[in-house]
Image (cartoon, rainbow, N blue to C red; front, side):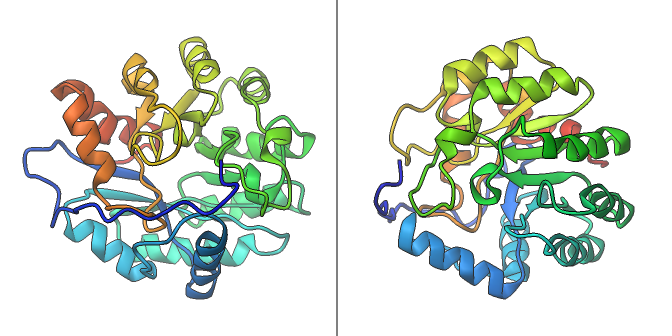
Length: 293
């Protein structure tokens, strides 16, 4: 999909979310220390798309909360061994300072002491785990995932894992199409029936296989991130959103976007009936992440 850089869009953005919308939880927001954020932006600017919102962490939080987003789920990931503890401590401190932010932990699958890294992160208040197959170069059914899955089940924490094949880029150190497949995710769902697992981007681009998995497994969730924006090539998989909205949650990838921050929420609001919209925009994420009032 990302054989070359995609263009940015100059679409209009709202000043804040409309008051008529139900509660909005953004379940897919990236927060990194400044230097790591800037490295991520350089990668996207070279290999992905232009970043419209080059905002650092505190600016990201203030931007979304001031525009009517009720809760923010903060995701990050480590691309080499030994990074996770410092990143987890950084996000845990952010969440302590702003209770409307739920921070997730990360770890590099297979690194020494991975399970202890996660136990420490959960003890510090982090509410789940984020992994990224493309960046961290692992397959969902690889043996090194067992201790991550077991740690999540042990602590009753959810896992958000970018395990869809797209967007693929030759700039990754590994080929996502060789690592990621719906059947490999199914192996994890079968082996760990108590694991709460969310696959972002509606499983892009294996929409039909993920629809089948969604109907078969009650421990699988999806998020809408970038998949319903009408930006990436291919179809908009509305059937996945509408099939089981209690298993689908709204997310954006903010701030690493090439289009308006509220583009996806506006498209969802234009498409979905009121009760389904309320489920996708907030209720599903509240249940998945066990968010209190």
